[in-house]
Image 1 (spheres, rainbow over the protein chains, first blue to last red):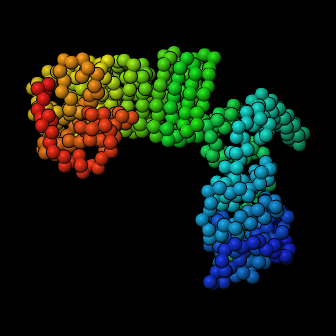
Image 2 (cartoon, rainbow over the protein chains, first blue to last red; image 1 turned 90 degrees about the horizontal axis):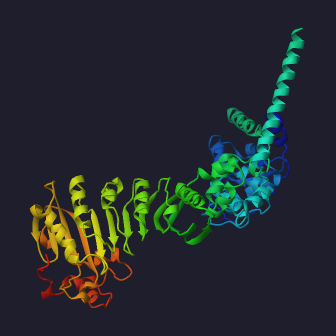
Image 3 (cartoon, rainbow over the protein chains, first blue to last red; image 1 turned 60 degrees about the vertical axis):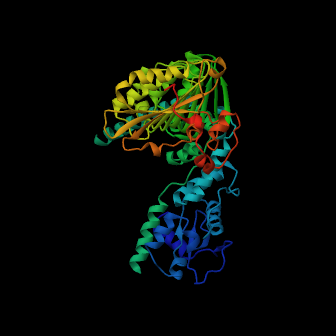
Length: 188
Length: 348
């Protein structure tokens, strides 16, 4: 999807989901921004909550546009699943303006979701949440043998790695040979 | 505002061209894997590094911090403790050496202690990063081997010679870390020439003021008079002052002196029973300007560093001698009346 298409799709965003906000009502009216993930569902997030994300915070500080304009142009994160982005938004809202606790037990336990969350959080540069997520990933293999870890995380053995590498080289060689033959045919 | 929107479009364009993530450990970027590894304990790291070559090199690239680590190695069994214990038996010494060196390679220790009884497994190949290093009844080979592998920054070296171990002091004193460590001691020292050799080394390397070496001796070791005799004989030409509890010598640096202090005030005679008592010595580099009135008479303050099991910093010397280790306020010790027996001792 090109940037223009994204701009178009976000120009008519779906009704923003309202994320819970735990912080007390601010004295001055707070500005809000909008983000959407792969599923195009737009999330309304306060500037305070978005401060957790160094990436978005950096973008906002470089922009300075009105709430209406922000609503019309949500930040598109096409590489993040909708449910993962929802988790991130929820976490940012829950921890808005609060010191982060040493542990966070609300992180997903399923491997796929956790890895997706880790990658999204790393991408959005949310340092504290990344720390929790990495801790959770580390906990997944606590007390596990190397074989069990290999199975849980689908880590190929060295032999499998070597075989895959050989296969890739073989394929690359064939493709190169095919391209050479095609180029020779074109030349004729 | 048009330019603002253009900027946003450019920014989001860059973001959206990134691929959709896979959700497998193997697809995670290296920096994320390293962050996760940092959160793992030692056992988890050991297991992960056994899964594949790539994971091994990642795990091995990460240091792990320990406030304290103890290596108790005996007959190919390593008991590595750091809060919790790892007890591992090995089929052969090579495996034991490999694991020990692996832990030393990835570990950054505040304190580390060695208790090695089996010389076969003693082969340090990795650098040791520790501020404080302890040796408990280790062979000379272990002590020398570990001291030579120390990285810079060691502040305390504590050697316990319990069991009658003797060390090649010339070899140990030639090690750079030993020459520059601010504090070190030999507990239950069986080598009466230790004080003289350390003082000579300090003179040779012009050690800093405050550098300290302590020894304790037991009834199994040489008589206290032997420690003193050797020291005095060697430094006859250097003596600045000599009192009952202290000998002060000059060094080659006119700004620095070396003070030898004896801890506890026993009256030694030929009675064998008295020979069984503890005796402590402290050797310290002092300023040549230091006056005798500035000497610290509270020997318990330094004795407890070498024998913290039996002595407390707050023990009064007379209580220690009487075997009554009651904690009393510092001021009481400081202001107590001088014991007539504290005076000059014919031994020195």
